[in-house]
Image 1 (cartoon, helix red, strand yellow):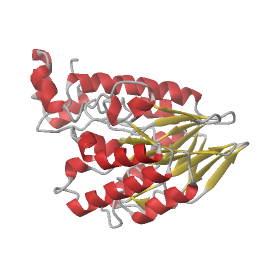
Image 2 (spheres, one colour):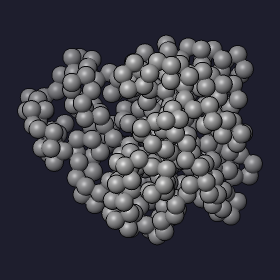
Image 3 (cartoon, helix red, strand yellow):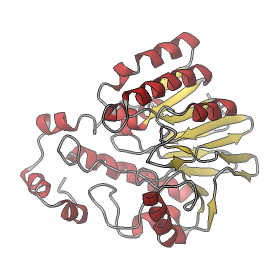
Image 4 (cartoon, one colour):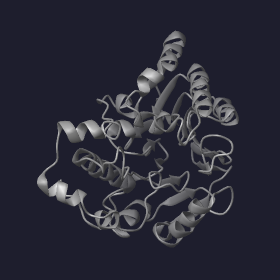
Length: 327
């Protein structure tokens, strides 16, 4: 669909992990968007299944290979599935102390969310830590909020901070990024959750992109951390987005629910009616979907892990982080 922008999802829920990490190439620039990947430490009362660890190892490999080629790395917000921390953690992030982050950020122009403004306390702290650790290896660290950066024939335009979901989200704010080359636009909208915010929807549509990657509404949290009305609004806005944009890559929170496609029936119907496409990252790549977290409970029943892995499961959370699982 795009001739001057090559978009390659590297890690995502449909690829077995928590992430929206994507590599974008133009004739002028190579951009690594949100270079983080994580696993949920406890879902359905269970740690990640061995298949999830194999998936994060593969995603880490792809991200490292893309980082070698990248000129620019972006950081939309400071959750660990969107940037890579500099400490040892084999349970959630599959990171070696310092080494993993340095491999991604060393020698790069890093365009990042402002760590001091429009940010909640936990992300402010993580932003400060990032600047002292992984960020110190960057060729240049630039606050990107509301700014446009030009690289010959390619521009990266960042939104002002938009809510991580609803307008009053306790999870803070994120940056969206529009990459444009020779009249073609790809818009990256991480963690906007649909979007739930009508203002965020308006900002996306106003850019008139041909391709959007968007984080869908968190149906697996509906009625728990997200109220039903917010989830409904996220679906309604996603339906409007599908109508406005020729191709949507739908990812992230929504795909942590095994029944997400059933809940998204109206979105797919709308896309078909107007001749537009809605794809997961895996489908965009021509691969089978691999929703491992959503299937975790079933995986432990149908593919029970080894005795050695079961012993590892009994370790404390802190010890699990410092001990590679026997997979």
